[in-house]
Image (cartoon, rainbow, N blue to C red):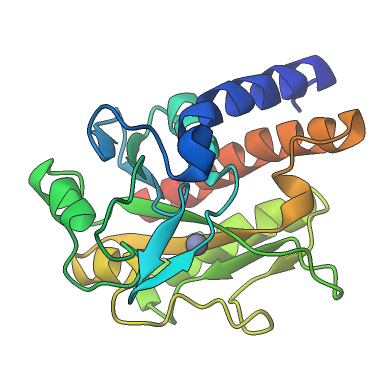
Length: 230
Ligand SMILES: [Zn+2]
């Protein structure tokens, strides 16, 4: 188990990594490439496409707070590949448009090889039913066992999980979702929706729990990826 000191250190790293996504009132930094796409040492790819404010069909959509920094910290801890949107510009939502420059950049980097485990991070509001994490994998057969292992792992650590997004309805079902796109390329893919309390940088008690959540999510992803290797 992760110590409280390690959890707080993870949360500190998360907070630091998230600052670039908070630039310009969460529209992201003016400088540098709009996307960051880096290879990893294992067949896991962590994605956050909504870490900054973005547009969908002409509408402005609020950012999924703190998911960009979480993707960076998770990928580093896992030795995984990383793909994050740093600045959405005028392009449509990468989790909505079937053809999107963010998706093309991941493809061109060669990160979407078959049987890669893709974890696509998103934010949901806190829910009255207490669900803290919702896993959307669209009934995709190859994604079923890894999703089950991740759900089992998180439940074992006392998080309240919607194992197949059947309660939240956040099932990644649209044709342009990151999850649908990755599965279409032969990857195993799971959309991970995270409640507000687990990704806040608020009071110390929340900070401790959100720090532990990074560690727990990382070990759950490692277990899910190992199942996929069998
Ligand atoms: Zn989202």
